[in-house]
Image 1 (cartoon, rainbow, N blue to C red):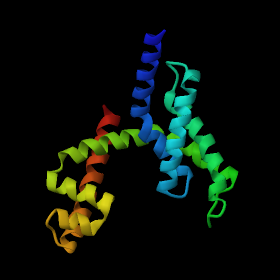
Image 2: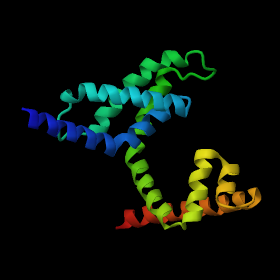
Image 3: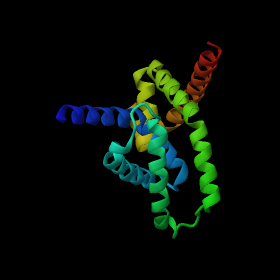
Image 4: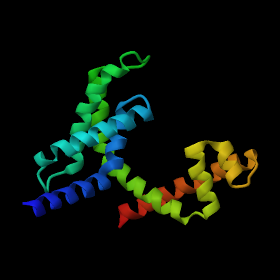
Length: 175
């Protein structure tokens, strides 16, 4: 029996690692800000762990986890009630359905983006990563660029990545 429990724990860790970005993306489409989405992801992860014994191996883990996330988002809505923008239930359900439909495409885009990022030279990759973690000023400083040069490089890199991802997805679709 303990061996079976260890196997289930390994399965849970593997599935959570594999699908955490998708679950987060789903949550983030339904809540007003990133910090709230991160908090809900943590709460969702706890519920997933608590209820993992209900999950049937071989079924769609991401769909099951997103259903748990849906209920966590609904529970958290009372926290957002004081917010200036709050979606009514029908809008929230429509966004949720669209997010579920787009999840495979988002996953493919994310994988293509990861591959394209790896093709960049380290200085450019650091510029991009630092820009989204700490801002343009810090990115310019870390990569030894002026602020103007950093903005120009970021514009060039965004176009380069867009083209790379588009080409990768097109190649996959025709293959």
